[in-house]
Length: 240
Image 1 (spheres, helix red, strand yellow):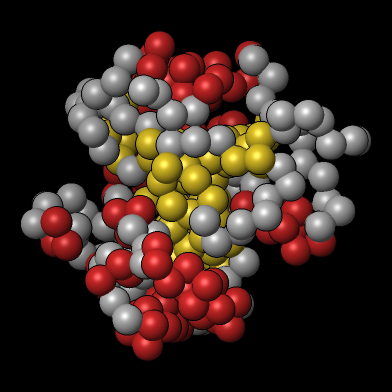
Image 2 (cartoon, helix red, strand yellow):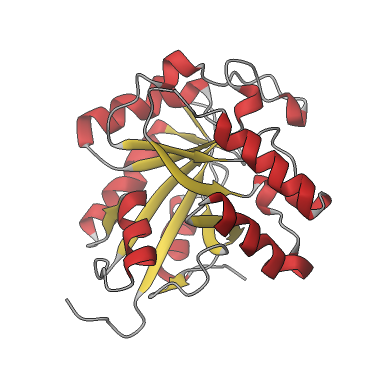
């Protein structure tokens, strides 16, 4: 397969799923199913995180013409209730980024009361679901110096050791924040730790081949926006 002109990858960012409630961080299961159906109907290929890593590290690994990567942040229990059964049925690859200090607790980093899955619950995930890093304490890396960033991510990675889950060495920046004036230093830290890709927000599509694997942009998929908003983001990226 050749590289296509205007070849782009869309990376979708979700957080919570619900049967009926929707807001900035919560998408209903009906919304999610409609969005996944739209991707399938319109010729998009949902790829796994490992496929993306292979593309980045092997260089000559070519992605599909219209690749989409599905990601979820935080690992809420509602993902166990709604996402896991969907993935089990449709065999669709997804990556969930985990702030490991809160495993089995709740999202107290933003004074919320939403439960986070336990390690036992996470281990029940379908094989199509992989798990990545979201810092240990869900802290903005923008606020940390280089030594603190390294320590935070080392603790995040060490928390996965010995766990029976599909870990992939990738990172989603909490709040989408990172030290923009120290991007070279940040990239060096991620390389040293063996992290293969890192994701910001940005709400834009990413050109392929990916030349900045530590600053891949994601599209923020919200439950308080209509279906037309979703299709525009998929087609064009950032909405003005």
